[in-house]
Image (cartoon, rainbow, N blue to C red; front, side, top):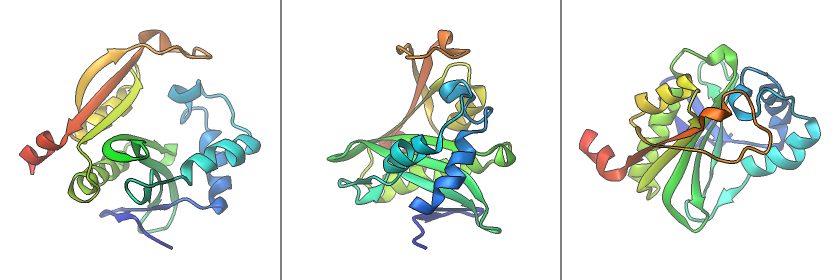
Length: 186
């Protein structure tokens, strides 16, 4: 198994086709998906035809994928995934940070630990200049992870939701961390 990044408690590795069952379980937990699609179920066909191809995409500008399967280092248990994806396949300057972890791993600091490690690797090794992250304004847990990971609030915005979900009427928020801000802390 190729390991992209290790932390004290996490291993981040590339996804494979064999991860379909774990992704299906993750995307079918209504609480995990509450701020993504309102908790609606995801079909196996959607996981295989849409989700996996997105997670398996290689980004030429970084020579890496943009999504990483997260496993607990001590047990190998699948926890979910992290996103650290260039917004432009040709330029690593701006990346989007994201995470989706199963409920059993919530409240243990995994999201912050993985996010910080990805941010450090991005600025130190991948040519990143700016990290951005978005969530629904009402998603206080995700916002807290962004803040604990070093990102700061940038703006509120509203998008057109094809299917409005509870809380979407409050809009979205964007957080960011620039290379200069990161360097000041290191």
